[in-house]
Length: 433
Image (cartoon, rainbow, N blue to C red; front, side):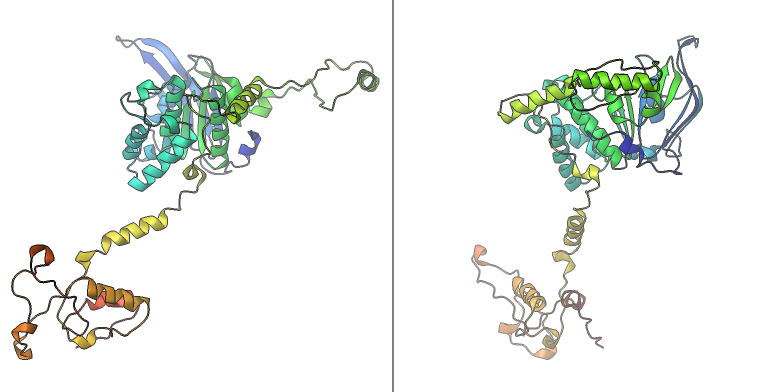
């Protein structure tokens, strides 16, 4: 797992903050408008661009209330809040925000794909983008084998996974995660923490709210600790967590004699005031031990009906979502240039390209001439016999019992729009009087 210190290097110095809270206060009142609870009390902090910010505190400390005020779901009693330089009630900023609430409120009769389809359509994503993102997100959260099961059949952890996917469907610039690891197993917890670090490295601004301090410590760079709705501490992990009265030295395995000699050196250098306080062997973390067991079981192909470990981070979250730009351009051109865009007019046969002309552009023109019979207009000055004039009545093909219609030849009086020919050949048609 990457160190959260690497996230701080991506912060944009001098850029305006994403979120500003100044003297924020929220008082809930009862029916008689009497103060019932002061959830947030004179709270001020800033969330800078491209950083992972931790909002910590025990239950009832005001974390969820602060998040709801930032989202515009609650109005503060006093104070000022700005998101992307605008008030939280501004609808224009909503499409730049992804939100995972503390409880996943999902439609129980929909499956995973239908759930993500619903949220993707709310953000007005086109069909191709929707399908591509849904495939990647379902694989990322490990629900590929359960994507067609109704959400009501999911465990709490699986519902939490699909909730994380819906928070990322719009590729948000500002991601708010309220207790994201609640209900997740250690595998899902590690994956969510790795995802938060990776998104922070890729330039996303993330607000992480949790009371599980071990999860936050691995992810965030800067944090605020709340209690009773008030800010108690603020700073980076190093400034808040480093111990100033202890020093840890890690080395390879040492024997007792070497340890005693090192202790003697410390006592001599400090005049006997300091010595080695504890000698212990490093112990593996329980999370790492658990993940090793899961990896061994997965390598043995042990079957499971729950969520899988999940795939790599979705490419559109990593800034790799531009591969469909060419496809979208082709789709637009295909829709714009159709059979209705080709018009047939009467012109002398000399203006048509020669059938002996070579090259890919002339082959395209020849296929256009042979694919559909051209309409021939009869002119009295030409004196064409009836057998060479235009067909009378509707053209009948073999399906109607009529004679088969021969393809039009380039020498006949048929013509394609000169502008279309110039586009296909890349040449400008000569101006005719």
